[in-house]
Amino acid sequence: MATEPGEPTTRELDLSGKTLPRFIAVEGNIGVGKTTLAKKLAATFNYDTLLEQPEDNPFLERFYRDPKSAALPTQLHFLLQRSQQIQALRQDDLFKPVRVADFLIEKDRLFAEVTLDSDELALYRQVYQHLTLEAPKPDLVIYLQAPLKILQERIRSRGIPAERAIGNEYLAALNNAYTQFFHYYDEAPLLIVNSEDIDIVDRPEDYHQLVEYLLTINSGRHYYNPGV
Image (cartoon, rainbow, N blue to C red; front, side, top):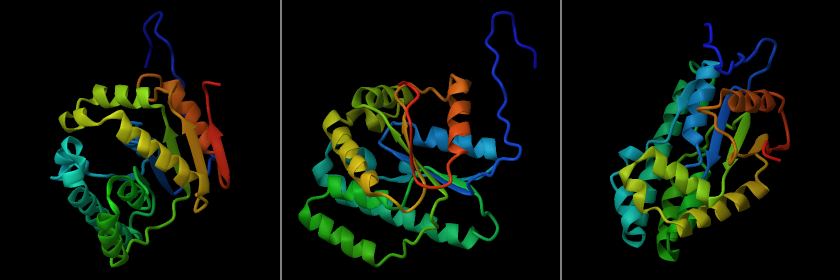
């Protein structure tokens, strides 16, 4: 397709001869862009998606308004939802072996530890232990990072009414929990991405460069910080 005079040109990704990770999980804080990246990767690689469904959680809006009263049902709903998704994933595994997810199942406990009090967390852990949550291990985990200011800007820009009550204190607690979690994470190759200066929606070259970098990873821990 021809471009108009003065319009920037964008090159196509060349995936020929590249070994693609068969199962990619994208993680990070609320508003960081997990689902956007997961959907773009799925479209690029012609993969299926496995996505969180926060809009199906009837307790979530109540949680954002009053965390103490709604934290436990919110977290248990997500836990049961993800358990069902993983069961379906196992059943489909022979037929749909390649996919991109916008969550790791381990993140459920991370959120529970941030939001629940000690008694609620004990009950949550009892439920967790009785569920079968052995999801397939990803071939690549992408952890998106961004400072609180950027998270709030992205949350506002997507305009979900329930998220208007999300405060910096909660986002900061989640940022700290994610940092600690991935500091010790070694279950799969890990790419930690500073997404503050990346715009994969409106700047195609940002997306292309990220994809080209992630396709070089087959083991270990890696950092992608294009703003430095």
